[in-house]
Length: 264
Image (cartoon, rainbow, N blue to C red; front, top):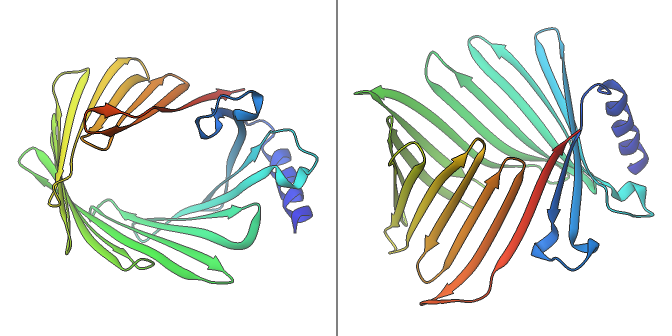
């Protein structure tokens, strides 16, 4: 099976030789202890068409030094998209290269005229099952937009509904289930700043502040009182994440991860 997987990867590489791969380098588990802390990953994708069906596919592989070549591929994926009676339909399969016994399957269907979309997640293999199903219906209302999304988590037996309203500067999102409700209000203060407080029926509160610092650059700070302070800094191809646990007014250390994407 591993030999077959390597053959597939080699085939994709020949077919899409003109496509440039992308290299992502991140710090593994926030550890800076020498080169071993780095986690470089190469991802490559390509696409073509067969009749009315658009095909895309790709490979994700580790580039860490190893004597086991078969351990390098992490994920192989493929996606087919077409249109059927006004519906845009796509199916994507993701295969864990180190566990070929099952495949993650995602099916999407969208009808722009009806303003309706549906999504299904499933696992296919030795133990096939449907993981979740959701549908989204949209409406235009008074210069804004309303979407209603019922979601059914079949694997964990959860059910909820997400109602979203948005206009030019404000977005309100309500997530409601039998056990809890959560409201998020996102307000764009100006071109560079956005504030989004969230409160739940269980009493949990969080506040997110996103500040744009230029083209493709931003700093997003999320405060969860008595829980954590998270900072995400995006600077073009660089992404840094800092997580600081909070106990009362004390900050207990910091977990840092850094990621860099490079396109050849």
